[in-house]
Every structure is written in structure tokens, then in C-alpha cells.
Image (cartoon, rainbow, N blue to C red; front, side, top):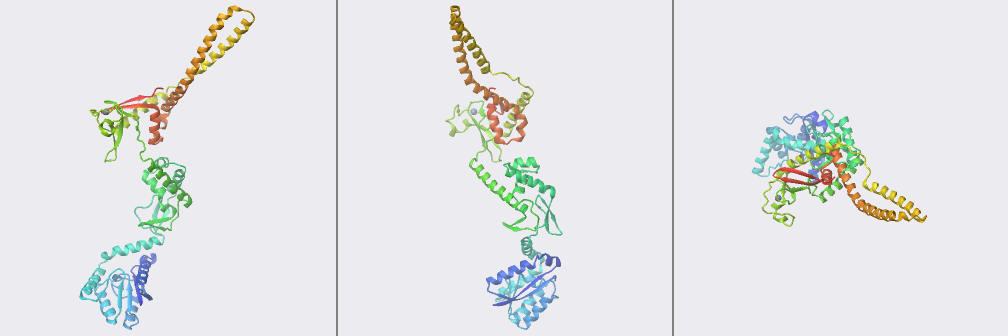
Length: 453
Ligand SMILES: [Zn+2]
């Protein structure tokens, strides 16, 4: 069936930005396709108000209807035909109905087939008069149209790297922030975490950092209601680099999921000062952790020192962690001020002793060979001395590995204060494990037992 379509936009601004017309047109075309209507002619009033009938194209439509040139009119909404209830009903009843012209609205159901439907249609005409009632739908249609054309969806909630230019309707990059973001992207690609990047680049929060690094707006796109549209604004990131970063993020996320139990600061270090059993972290509903004695958990009775009568209190992990951190940093700082002398290791001393003894033995052997029997006793003594030294060296060689470990512990404590603020929780936990033997907790009081060093 053939039909004609009527469109109207009120202000010039709307007409310019295509705010109304494009979305009206699209919806009308979709509607006609679905309902097997072929649009033979368009009547378009641009920049005319719907509150009266002084519109050239409306007048042409009315004339064409009276001349029986038209048998079906399609409009976006009833308010496009008229914003006046009286005019609206006049057009429907006196122009369309009288001339057997069917009238279809894409977003209002207009029908005069029964008294009920007639009343309903008249009600629609009342609504059309009320700007507010129809504003929502028109705004939505307009907004999507704007975005499909690459304009930003307006002020408020502007992306971090851009400002909104009202005149042009698009986003304009903020140079400084764009550079900050590009630096952040490269850091991310080279393996830094959001938290680390936040600190290095000076973003307000981790969330802002993540939004900047994952926002498609930064490659010139506009996200809107679950879809992504090509924007008119300048991209900040190179698209390939951005996509690489997204791939990396995905793979890092899945790696995180696989080791879901990321260690807490003191994981594996806490022991109950009452019963001697291990203590562990437990997440509370407020998202914070408490540290509790495993003796409280019947499921853990296989653990050494399990004691169901233990009355040690549960403590907020934050409090315990702070105590341990303060204490360890204090130790570290004092250690840093003390520079140990470089000393020869015991093993080295023993080895040079052995060399001296062996040289001496050689001399004694040659004396004995020359016929000097008095050295025989000395040779015997020296031989037993050498075998003892060799034994000592073998023992000390085993100890040397321990010495290296102690040296490692010592170095770690010494460096701790310098690096503490720049390492993540996992690294902190690792370092603490190399220097702390046990953190013993009794009712909120903490005692740190350092490893031997
Ligand atoms: Zn306990």
C-alpha cells in the first residue's frame, strides 16, 4: 500500500543538528517496511512549531488529502501533526477521516475503529499538547541520532581526557591529560598494574586509571546504551596500542582469577600466642579482614597445637598489619644506619690456613727425606692437624649456604624501608616471609620473631 509521510521539527537548532528529522525518518521508514507501506511522498516542515497549522507542508498535505491524492499518512508521533488538541482532532477527523485517509503514528496508536479507540485517540491528542509527556521519547530518539552522527551525548560526566565543546557538540582532548593517558597506556602494556600506574602518573584513583585505560572514547568511539558508535572527536590512543592493552588486561585478569587467593600482607606468618596454632585471615561482610586463631575452626583440628579452648580474640587485620609494618620499618631504618664491615668469611680463613699447613708439611717431608728423623713427630702432628682443618672446612662449607641465606635476610631488612611504599601486597608478603619467622598475636598485641640473621 502506498502512503505519504509527514515530519516536523520545531526549532532551527533541532533541524540543523538533525536532532529530530533523521530519527523521525528512520523510524518512519522502519515502520513502513514492517507494515508493507511504500512511501510515495514526504511532507517535511522544518523549523515550524506544532502549536498552530501555519505550516506550508501541512497545508499541502491537507490539500492533497482533500483532493483524494493521499490514502495513508504516516507520522512519527501525533505531536508532529499538531501540538494543539483542537487542531489534532480537527486534522484527524475532518481531514483524514472525512477523506478516507488512514493515519498511522509510529509511536502512538491512532485508531477510530471503535468508540473506545476514538476516545483513546482523542486522549492521545491531549497528550500531544503536553510537551513534557512526549519529551522523553523525542529526547531519546534525538540523542541516539546525535550519537550515531558522532556527536557527544552532552555535558556532564565528560570523559577524563576530554572537555565538552557545546558549540561543536563534540569532545576536545585536554592535551595534558592526553599525554598522561598515553604514558599510562604504555606503562600498562609494559606490565604495570592500575594501582602502580595511578601512583606513577598521578591519577586520582585506580578506578579513574582503569577507566582511562579501557575507555573506547579514547580511541574516538562513543559508547551509548551498550553500543559503540564512531565519534567525531580526536582519539587519544593509537588504536592498535589500545587493543593490545585490552588483550593484555584480559589475560592478566584470567591469571588473577586462577590464583584467586592473593596473599594478604601477613599470610602464613601469624601464630596464636595463646595456643600456638596458626592464625589466618577471614573476610568480613564489610570487605575488611579479621585475623583469627585456627583453633576456632573445628575443620582445622588437624593443625599442630589445635586447641578448642583457645580464647584468643579476633582482630582486625588492618590493626595487626599496621603494628607489624611500623615495627619492621623501625627495625629496617635502624639497620640502615649501621654499616657492617666487610669481613673475610670463616671459610676463606680456614682455607688459607689449610694452604699454609700443607706448605709446611711439604717442607717437613723434604727435611725427613734428607735424613732428619727429629721432624717425624712434627709431621705426624701436622698431618692430624691438616685432616682436622679439612673436616672443619667441609662443615663450614655447609654452613656457608646458611650464611648466604642470613646475608639475604639481612639485606632484605636493610632495603625494606626504601622499597616498602613502592611494592605491592604480594611482594610485601614475600619479603616479610624472608625476614619474619613468626608474628605472634595475643589479644591484639603483636610480637615479631625475626629470622636469624
Ligand atoms: Zn589460639
